[in-house]
Length: 108
Image (cartoon, rainbow, N blue to C red; front, side, top):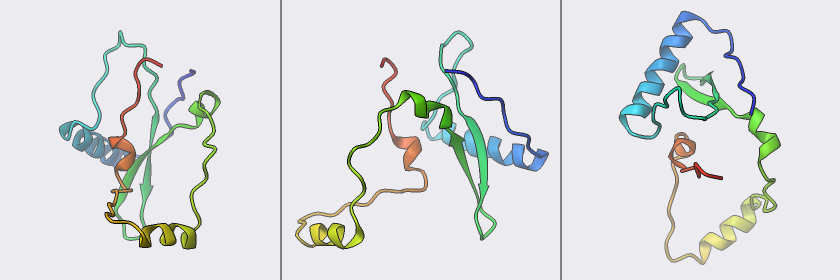
């Protein structure tokens, strides 16, 4: 996979990205990689919410050529609510940081 060069960013943006990355490292959601590891990394992108808060995302567009399409689309709202009405247990997922909690197979 080709590496994507970093996007141009301001000093303030760089500091905010580093802050978020350090938080994820402290929580063991991500790990540092060594130069000897054959791992392609994503380019971090800082998203600003309407309330001024930040969220760090990754630009994974280069991976689109290497992934399989999901053949099961997300359910429409009424259909999903119908299924929930019959459920005995309901759980929820933190959609803000959920993507950093999914484990990826290191040996495809």
